[in-house]
Length: 164
Image 1 (spheres, rainbow, N blue to C red):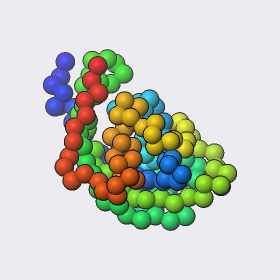
Image 2: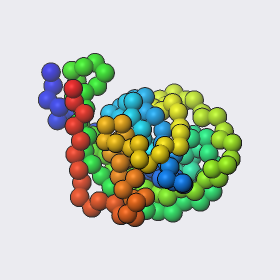
Image 3: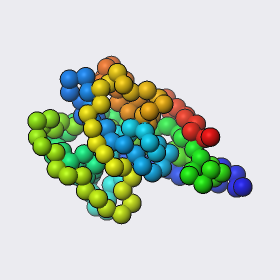
Image 4: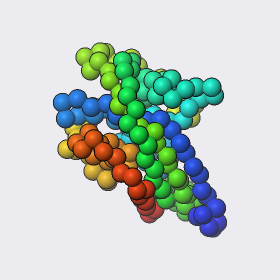
């Protein structure tokens, strides 16, 4: 087996925090280190896409909601070590997240979630903030709940180990 440090990836993306009535919009991951966990809507920018265009597109693709307004929050980063589905390959990820507060019309009938090759999530929902734990949610969701409650994001990077 190759050293896990050989399987290092850096991912930078834009992510939206949309909260109302002690709930937030999350997606359910079906691929990657957060498989089976709640995560924030978002992801990588496409070629020639601005940050604003990227978060608006990602939010629509992954939740079905139309973004009415965004406000920059800041950035956070963390490292994740996990075992892939084959049960023996360990990967390391340095995840850099540019966070935005997102406003949608919660009364809007969300459009169907788009299906495309490489899609890594399969549902979106409003989740009660009190249901978020580090066991059922990605580090981004845990940090988002902290931001909703305190309006601060951590300065120091943190690490998570999802090896089994």
